[in-house]
Length: 258
Image (cartoon, rainbow, N blue to C red; front, side, top):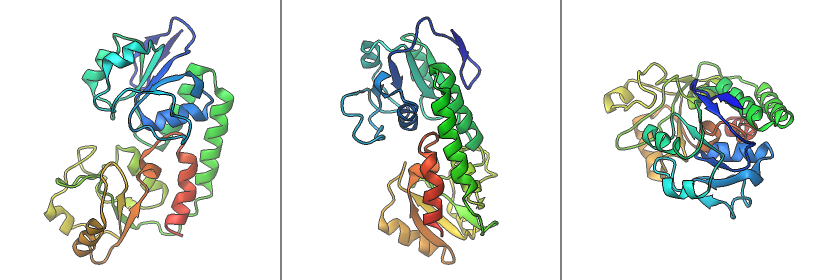
């Protein structure tokens, strides 16, 4: 079976897939949602969903520095990686062990396409269609009444970093009907200077729970920098985890800003 991954590479699968290694937490959750949990033999340290179902699966390290030797010992039939999350040199090493399917998700539509692509590989069309329908229905019911509100969404501190329009987080901000103040920056995750922040004047500052763990004092700092803005700690997974977690995101957004 020959398949094309999301960066255009052709991958040959020489036998039915029975052993999967996932290098992305959101993909691990999505594979379970598609009914593939029993085939997953390796996951990262950061894979936490679905809760209570991961205890017996081998941990293969982090997303940036997976344990290549341990992955090889698991004899995977396929490894699933992410272009933006996993390091290229590590992915190239893993290609010597097993076929590596590389995902690239930069927006909401890419995420739905990714679910469909996984369904094709694993013959899970029914499950994928059900998940996609549930996600679309949830966002269709997301009533947007504050279009034009401006959002600053930092993802890191020291240095302060945010997200541009070529990121999945940006597309989720758009789904809320808001404007990402860093959309026009050249890099996916641009460094934001103090001078740039002084010119922003956001309506909201969203401080996500991941990848950076913001503390109460960070909230107070943001309030001093942006006195006119509403500063909200938010669940980073709802903005950044593409795949199965998206079915919870619309409901979360409604509760976040009723």
